[in-house]
Length: 450
Image (cartoon, rainbow, N blue to C red):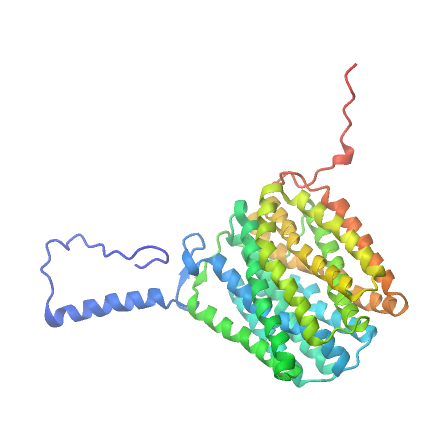
């Protein structure tokens, strides 16, 4: 029997006493060995399975997660690059319409908890592949429906794929990656995704003006590239078996409350950046498609370089210190956003704000350390729902606030970062099962000796 990641050795106790085959007799044996080796080389998701701990090299689960992250970003990054310009230049969207569109985009994220029920019908890896398929198709057809309703519908299709992929990718990462090095590995996964972003943004930046590209063409190419990479993954990688069988029901545990709170606030903060910071660049400072692409190109380069380092720093210094650093920085960024008038400074803030996203790895690894291993998949869906509770109403409400005072939107973001800062101080220095929260302010202060 051939095992993945194990050398192929022919074990036969009678081999030394058997006469060697010759001529025609040797052909079937040779063909058999040839077929076995071909199956080993061309294993696919449909024909082979492997345990995550046994797979090594470029066919390891970590590399699969990296390539999936790249496949997702090829289409999503291009969609995100073009989204604001497409909405403003082609559809004449204002803050109200962009808020509605972004709220629609977040509905699948809010419903991510339903992923646990889909796992009754399919494996997590299958659902991740299906999600990439929906993402690629949704992006590819966006330009063919240049109306408000068409944009809302294609956004919904794309978003279902994106959010369910992210849910499965988080679950599989926490199951497949060792706890001791998970943060560092996640940093590398983010770096590969950033490299794919560089490809998408770079091609848009160079090709938009040079070849006079249209929104329809770029959307179609970006979505198509994701589908091509997905086909490769299905042909080149086996099905990786689960290490610990996952619960196929919703899991809400009281001892995970701090993880839920951090996740909720991270989702609220993310909306201020993803919806309104990008819209600020286009509406107030008049950034064109290729200029937005260049800004995103810088973001991707920063992420590719610093995300692995951030992962290593989280491993070294812990989740608590990393998140405290992030939220102190975000308070300063959002306060500056509120009153910025210089387009160059606004662009610098955008890059700095985006760089802080990599530190969110610490929230995931904090949960990995405190969680029951069988809770990871169902909690990933619940966490994405919690993350998107604020995402459903913030774009609409703050879109209306934006019409009155854009500064108020960013000052509210600074307030959210302050709440997150307090919550991050409650993370223990060494979190573990039974040690989920550090109530530091309840501890009695030691009195000096007399």
